[in-house]
Image (cartoon, rainbow, N blue to C red):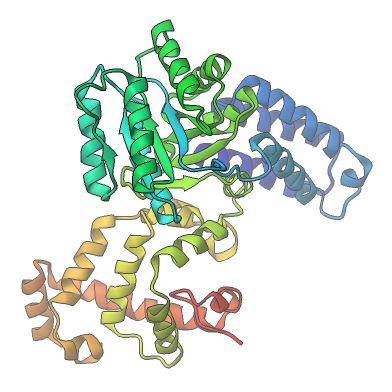
Length: 450
């Protein structure tokens, strides 16, 4: 996400760094390029106007023009203003004083409401809550069936409803009673959608709001629709009073204009973003981290949180010991690749890395997810002795491994070369710059430093 905008803004800052001195003239050029980059990223024109005016006012001050590193000062100002537009701090999901908390999930048809309801239920379950889902879409039986299927997939309950519960309000009230009786502390109400906003839809949602008194009304918007998503969110807010937004398909939106516009236009925060099709591909929205990624500074905090949530701590500590003692085997190499899979797509992981120094070209790396499957198959075709000591893998062994894994000898050779390189790299990391800073977290790949 944000690839296009990030690339253009970084080019602007690179040009500024090339200037020996910051002047009113080259600052005007930079601001014009920033304006064009934002507009091309489909950012709302009012957002662009305010951002440019704020940056200009602060950047043209004497303390910036005379600074030792004026380009860095400008980057700092742009970052601060972008964070301000996105909401400064993460907006957490609010909980009712007395359970169950009612969350209305609203939006247009096809925006991803039902899938987002399932993702949100899973996220709540992973964060010490016990959600109950209910679909009140009485017009499309397939929508209610879809939520039931999702509930089975993520192993969380869905209130199916009784025969006499024929209206959205009756279904939602019954689900609330069910939650109170079974000790569920959150009820997620997946509402009906339309292809466009109409009076019937809004009246139905107003009745639900009046009957349930929801703590949160979350509008689900498709990031791929750009400014249409912003307009729809604004209209829903004017008529219903939404409390936050879930922006779906952020992984497929290279521009990101909707994310940068939606809070400014509606006044309501982005609370979650969908970054993939899997049910764990929903993340809380952190304005400061997103801006850091746009400006090429990476999002190491989110990376660390992903690792801590998915990697076994004891295994990570054992891996550090092996790295330091130079005992990193092919079996360990395979296990590390499997651990990487738990963190999500490799492209999303690389996107969290700072685009500076030795990591500056990571964003251009072409990642073949199938390569991990091939590597795992090759290592699985080896004997325990071969995994423990790759030096004994001679020509005949390589041919046998290739046959067993359905690959070629060339691919086996390539893996062994990659393994040797990874072993050297990880040994370097364990005692180098990254190890010193991340090692204390006991994460895989990084040595533990005193």
